[in-house]
Length: 146
Image (tube, rainbow, N blue to C red; front, side):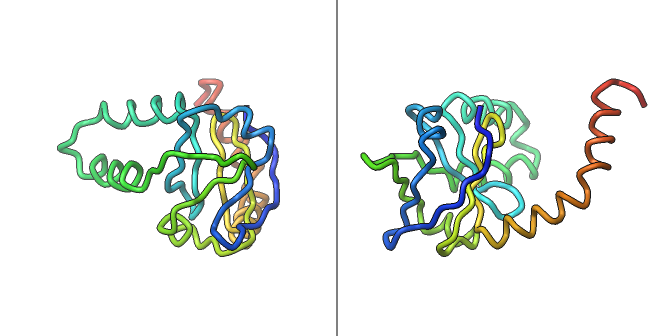
């Protein structure tokens, strides 16, 4: 399970050092792609398979499915960590997530998010404002009580 947040910087070659705990859990076959709210998402091989299988089970006649597939899989890249645990993030992903130098890496259970630190701080403010109402709504619906 990925958890916590870590501050890192891209090096001059656009490489990012992943936290040791995250590297150990990623294993072989991990994938990085476009996430939501202007971040990047890293999936283990198993989570990537689960996520894409669910998407691919949807009807290709649905425009939302096709667009999501294009965005998700068309921007996906296999992760190859070097001996130092560095990941070379493709330039199109860096651009899409507005990542230049300062990066925040966040563990979200089954996957990892990679944020431009400035964007992460803005998202944290929004999350802080909505945390209680979101938690109440999720708890309410999670219990099956309408």
